[in-house]
Each structure stands twice: as structure tokens, then as C-alpha cells.
Image 1 (cartoon, one colour):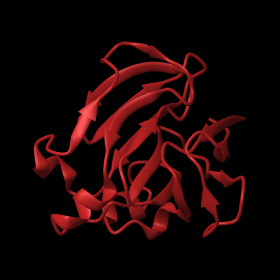
Image 2: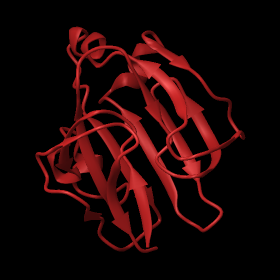
Image 3: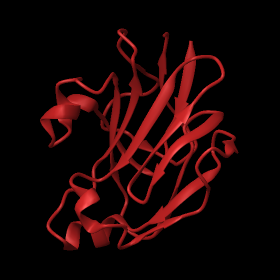
Length: 150
């Protein structure tokens, strides 16, 4: 079992609540969604691993133990071309769970008419995520979000 940490502070939700059918249907993988708190915050690494990909609005951390976890900050945020996001880590860098990766402000994303809801999903894993707390409860960045066996 791998414990996946919350990359941001906010309200934990089932990934099926994502306002994007690609995430909501589980097509990308099992995981969770987070309705982030407003205000500038740093999104952190959900696991120990290597930053395989880093975009202003999303990043992928690959564990030595197998799973790869994608963090996607907001919906359709690729269309912002990096505006409002600041990378704090570099691609191919080893990171520890809880290490800051991207600084952003969910309220700025919402001002553009987009959802700031974040997806935290495990790629290439056929098993469901097991929430470590009830959906709807508050979670801080770096707190355990879900467990998964891949």
C-alpha cells in the first residue's frame, strides 16, 4: 500500500466529482479530488519520487516503488499558459513527499471562469483509491489523502 498525500489544502472529494469527464470517469486513474482553499498556496509532492513531468498547472511524480501520481491544478488550466503558476522544482528532480512543487492561487484560476478543483490520480493502476478520511472533510497540504495498492 502507498499513502498518497494531499498536494493542496482544501476539501477532499471523490475523483468522480471532478467537473471533467476524463478524470471523473476514472479514465486517467483512481484517486481523489480536492476543492482547494482560496489564496496563494504551494502544491506539494504527494509521494517520494522523481518529477517525471512538470508543467505550470500539473506535475507527475514517479515512485521507485512503482506508482506514478499525477497532480492537476484546476480544470482547463493548460489554457492559461502558465499565468498565475510558479514552478518551484525542476523536471527530473528527486522530491520528497510534502516538498513544494508549484505555487499558485486557486482564486485566480476561478477568476478566469475555470474550476480550481484539483485531481490527484495514480496512473496505470487498476485498483480503487481508499480514502483515509471521509470525503467532504478538510485536508491540509501534506496530510494523507488516500491509500492505494498497485
